Amino acid sequence: MGRSKEISAGLLVFRRKGAIEVLLAHPGGPFWAKKDDGIWTIPKGLVAPGEDLVGAAEREFAEETNLNAHSSEAFALAPVNQKSGKMVHAFAVEADFDLNAFASNTFEIEWPPKSGTRQHFPEIDRIAYFALPAAKTKIIAYQLPLLNELKARLG
Image (cartoon, rainbow, N blue to C red; front, side, top):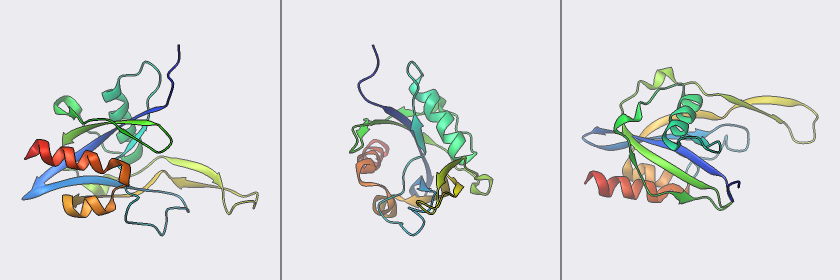
């Protein structure tokens, strides 16, 4: 029997630089190019049926950032739901990455719309660490509980 709804998994990477900072990703593509607050996300993606959630989170993180997070010390956060009903499982892992190695996979769409021209865009166009107060402004609303839980669990 198949799943009733899609499932995504991702990593919420954090570091401690005096205060807790989290790594967020800005969606790529022309629709998001001029948007900022309220659209950043954790790197995440679809989980195949039967796939390990942590393994999927690591894979998606690597595909979207070109960075490898080893989640042996990761801890699960309570899943959150997108408006579409998709459930997102997130795992918090501490890491301080050199963001100069960032690169993202791409997707193809017709752009401009109805032009007949297809273009490739990065799935994620940039990543950055944000202190929690700024991250709460940047992150997409349905993922805000992830930040709140991380703060509560780290103290």
